[in-house]
Image (cartoon, rainbow, N blue to C red; front, side):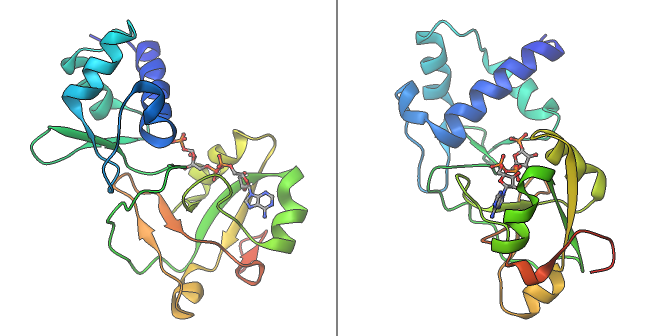
Length: 185
Ligand code: HQG
């Protein structure tokens, strides 16, 4: 059975393929981002990347952030969020909690407070429901800073929010007036 490291490698390769570059593996995603599981397994085998159906199931189930999901009958797989590709993830708009959090790093702070949060290469701006998760996201880029997003106010102002299958909150952009660097938005 796949060990932890093995899972990380597979998770990285799956993220690469299912979020950003399916064509590099000769694969296509449908409009909702789904990839045929048989085709995925064949593409990995062709490239001598060992990935059995059982291991794939294990990765989907045990991945630390539950990054991937199967469709109902298990014939298709997709990344639940994080795409740079144009996909329609068919999440329903949802009312967010009063505040959400965004983890970033100090060197981006001035630009963010001036321009707001932008999705950049991703499909959405990614927000977390709790401070700890946001701090961990920020830590990927350097010394973490957690921003407070006045999500309920954004929603009241007509901005759409979505919650991914793995609990990441998604929105198009966060203008600076909804952001603050402390817990008193
Ligand atoms: C920053 C991971 C300057 C933004 C995580 C972030 C997440 C700006 C960086 C998911 C800016 C983009 C996404 C502006 C935003 N000026 N910098 N106006 N607006 N930024 O990696 O949110 O492990 O594309 O603060 O856990 O860090 O991959 O986005 O620092 O859920 O599953 O530009 O990726 O999930 O960085 O992370 P990213 P993110 P996975």
